[in-house]
Length: 81
Image 1 (cartoon, rainbow, N blue to C red):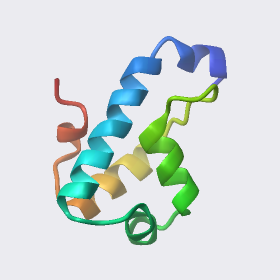
Image 2: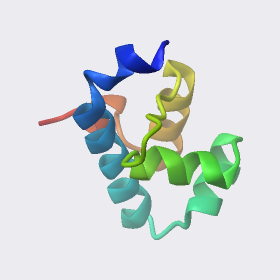
Image 3: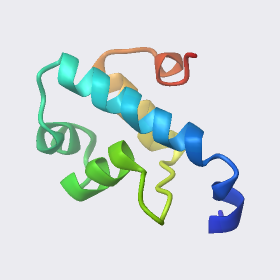
Image 4: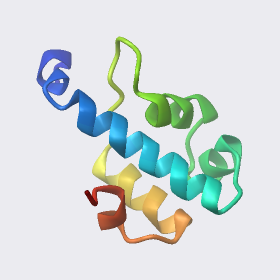
């Protein structure tokens, strides 16, 4: 997806990252532990959770499903208002 197309959803990506961070902390996990559990690197989790720099980080559906699975929350919880 092109960066300018992602830009229109910047706030939603930021909120998604905050929700991931919330559920990770609720499990008392570090970013490194979450990254290991889902099979990615720690910097990806950090970028995903912050999403407040110039570049927007959009996870794949697969990665969203994996994150929700290991955090033991329905994926819908990551999008609730």
